[in-house]
Length: 211
Ligand SMILES: C[S@@+](CC[C@H](N)C(=O)[O-])C[C@H]1O[C@@H](n2cnc3c(N)ncnc32)[C@H](O)[C@@H]1O
Image (cartoon, rainbow, N blue to C red; front, side, top):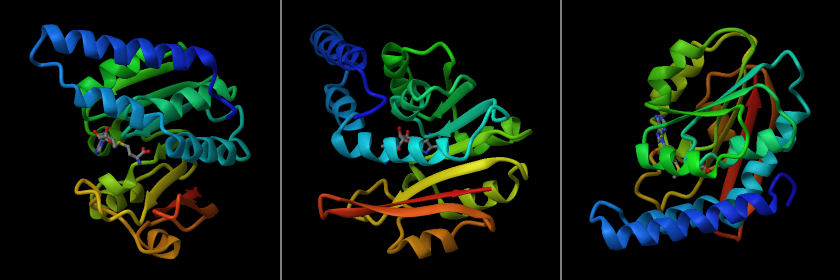
């Protein structure tokens, strides 16, 4: 898989080993984090982030100095974008402090930063000039809030959004039956790319890139 090197796997192994060690000493270290790290670098995650990086790289250029990632989990997308050659600042915004702590341990590139907060609320502070906005976790974000936020976006901003039809997960509050339904839910007129990837006959992942 492009954009994934042995160093990141070394860091993942060190991180999960550390989570295990800490869990034997401190009650507040939850072994669920062990599985969460593995899930965030699973085959499906690598494929969907690789897809986003490949399609975005066809559209972005040196004028795009900054990328904002909402719901960054452990920072996989930002890692792959930096590994693909993006030199601008990549700002990951994540609600969960522990995810950010883990993401900082896994970080390789200096142009990647992690901010704690609600990406929908912080978006307004970052919404200027021609940046890139990425959210591969739209299924976790309220449809109305996402739509309202996107209506405010700077006209030059390129947005790359992913959701899915994987309704079975409780935290998936914004799934869609089809790619067309996902597109209809978004207030975006200038669609530059849209596509579907099936994951192991379990669910479809949808991606929309628009301006
Ligand atoms: C389970 S993960 C990622 C799932 C998604 N399939 C992906 O590949 O990106 C979703 C992450 O989004 C974060 N999240 C959800 N809503 C958010 C928001 N409004 N702002 C920032 N982070 C958010 C969660 O804390 C979680 O770490």
